[in-house]
Length: 300
Image (cartoon, rainbow, N blue to C red):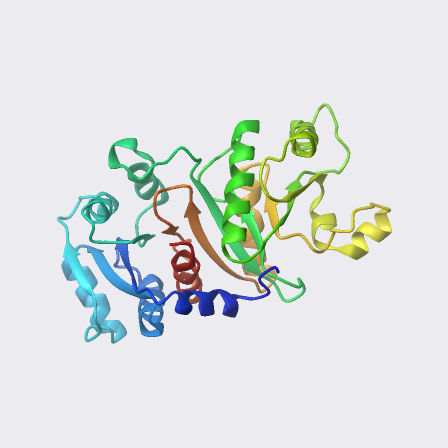
């Protein structure tokens, strides 16, 4: 059964009985700290703070968190906190990685560097879970941070990563939509051709343990009424569990629009690495950081 809301994700994180050590790269980030210490208070993480010690301690004092239980690993100004965080994880001193105040490029490059040992044979994929008032359950979308313009092969990996992730949170056979501008394959829109080909391949030899629909336009993914008005015959319209975006731009814009204009709650995790990686935008709220840690803890 599909997960209906974030409260179920949080409850699953609590039920694991584990307090995952989350290593926060660049921990001098207000909302990241608030979210992480909220998760710590709920019992499913233990914060390991990496960054410039004076900046982190000053922020902890200002936020009233200085007396809480945490570890602090200081670095020199100019050092990359993500590299230090990954070193700690490789030394067995952390279970989860989380982005703090670091720029996206500075965070991703050490994660993607094979020398750091966190890569697997799977594509690294950022998947967001989203809750919107008008949608009946949580919906996933990816990739929204890592792969700029996924190839056909990379789209297969994103489908696999999304399916495995959703199945891990008790969605036995998730319904995945391949987003495109239109629902009819058109030779001058390569995304529609690739979506058609992926669905045909999936019908012959399943890519993952999911159902796959596409190409399919945004309104048809989210609305049964739009499907009725357009005469589009797919019973999954308005009931999809995940969206594979045709590009990083499309996925990222959709999530930000949902957050800013559709009153959506979101959380994000990078999957495909040896450990889950909680990742949020630096402008996201403490709630997003908290939920991202709950999601990552469930996947750990």
